Length: 188
Image (cartoon, rainbow, N blue to C red; front, side):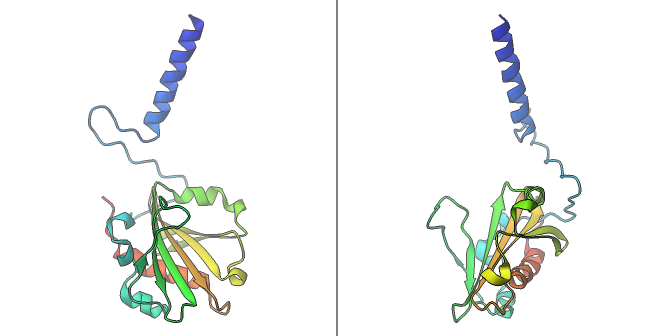
């Protein structure tokens, strides 16, 4: 009898955890918005998933960064199930920028794991919290990743790659996000 009670209690506790972690109510009402992590505020949430990936970066902004005006969506050859980025290349093929909206991810995950990155900086870009989080040195590697919170559970990832290390990959990624965020629709 004790074993059965323990199993029932554990099952009830697990169901409570599942409900707290995003399950909707049983009355048909939508699940409440996740609580904003302490210290992180997204004043004007945007929805990067509501826009065509290759429409995330305006053509004039891409051209201003020395990239093709139109990007091309590419799937990940190693993981076809991974979210596909839109990629913009320079005419000479030396510079590349990719933008990828990532659903179900919070900026807090980067803030909480900053020790894992050799190059880490918390930023505010276009009024949104962001994190520059790189495993190596962007100046030496020519690659920079910046993750911007468009809303509580969505990130817009910008990755810039430059072959000429005299260019600033992080500057390109940041400028792309500065241009993209104002064009995003408001989150519903």
